[in-house]
Image 1 (cartoon, rainbow, N blue to C red):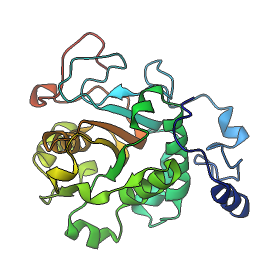
Image 2: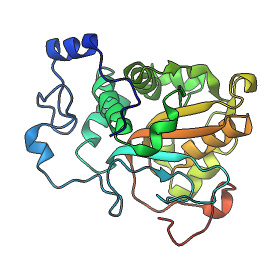
Image 3: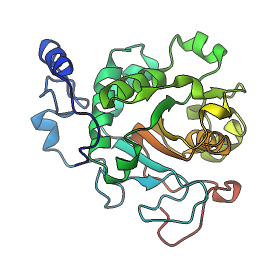
Length: 259
């Protein structure tokens, strides 16, 4: 357990008592500090990443949980597998307009981060999210990653700075594209808004889901090339698939531990 991040405040605990937390798998009421109800907690975990514990971060670029030689190494931590029951509430937030679901997802994400040893150095990080263009925001009405990022920053007692990163190109929706095309789709789509605000800073980058990692990699590249010291990526859902398109990725390394 990483005790460096701020625990739940009295106000947060009171709100959870007045408005009970719901299991992110089945929707039943659960304990204020537990993401799963007792029944779901007893089910076989669908969060394991090839034997790694849920609290273990992996390199976004090569997939290794061990120290690696990736030039842009960025620890990545997700809470549940993409095909786990957690997908239900994720879809509620992203596609069904249920913005209130962000609160439960963010609580789960911040608790996962507190359990992650590699997150320790990020206790003074600035929090930002994967941004949208103005046109995308108008179509959807909200940025679900921003809802998660703001809630995570509040829960961890970190500074919320959504303006650090901007999306500079319109892209097709990633979930409609096959893996290889996702890297081409977001190539050069993100840029730092103000490099002076990033120089030598630690960044916690929040998104709702990662599958191929293409979007997060482009965001990390933009942040690091603008001067950020290091970036930690946090998502609610993730995929245990192998890192795709390594030959197109300057940040990746090749080693036997890659997943």
